[in-house]
Length: 264
View: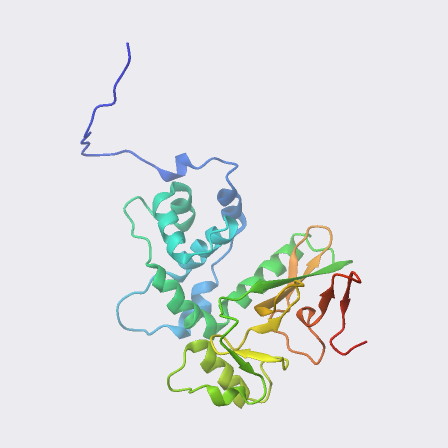
């Protein structure tokens, strides 16, 4: 006889455990076995007020960001929705069935506030590398550099010549990326190499035609990785030197080679 699920089931009490519903070979369970975030709260202690309403646990936010990284969830709004619906994500983040998921705006405020001021992500990155070295995952005998160009969300039409670009910005009315760019100009170190164009939307981007097509604004990321286990051991994304970046070299499809910006 064909069965039918009764509609509108009303149960007063549930005997439910998230722990029992997460497979032993689940990726997040394997990460949880080696993840150590015990120093996060101590590292951020001085960036929180001793009084007032309790904040969102910073370890919870870090765990949610790890979920987003592992499963390719780039939107923080979507990340919050996925953690709300997925039992595995809830378990990894230490949330029960009835616990509320932080609002997506919480990540933005902390990323440009406490996390940035405390350099938390750098501290976590260095901690992971140190743990990999302790466990013998980093041989230290051979390394490779992985460089990528990430297209920025900046209109290529909203740009000005690099020389005198700071005259187009008003620090009292501009957004955070522009204020940081102006602050760097006032400092001792130039925030980036001089390029032909500067974006009015995000001046920290670079004007590049590295892909061989039309020029656009982008970011350049560089990672130094150990050859055997492919563990990233150094991030050069914030490095500023007098050398040309990868994005400065333009690919010539006819000659099948990159052309040096210095003409060599």
